[in-house]
Image (tube, rainbow, N blue to C red):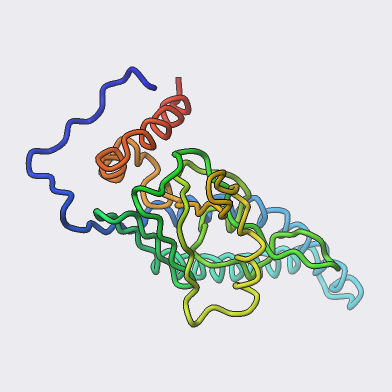
Length: 239
């Protein structure tokens, strides 16, 4: 465990009433910055394609026109993606109460009760659906909101896992349901029950959650789980 002092509880704090959190405003910007890793090469490929077409058509100044057209296409694609991300994040909430933790997005709701939390650790994000033809790949039709950060870049983030339930919204499509099914055991299986562990992505709502209000909730009901997450968080701090 970290030797750093915990944040003291505020005198008026109560854990009897539910508290709901929304993603921080910086999440959209952070997500789209990661998207640039994919968009920058796309600009080059688009330019080469457009330049080849213009050369074949003998258009005057093909280099200039291809740069302009590639830029317009890339900006339009980036804006479409930004709108999608904003839509996903706008429908996300995290509710903590005496029963447990509920993470909700436009497609699925995850719930783990306090007594069935199994640990605080780095959790893996949802990856795209695997098929026999294309193999395991990250597709554009990922389960929205379940892991907004990993929708543009694979990775892990600090959260908690436990034995709980994932309920799909009635509006969820067949591909979204299949994607979730294929990711069912991505964060492991509970040794005691054999059930897949449900991951809760707390850093989507606060990157520094162990030092903030979400962390205080986890610490209040499950100090052991909080201690595990806090130790990892402290190790990741810039030295």
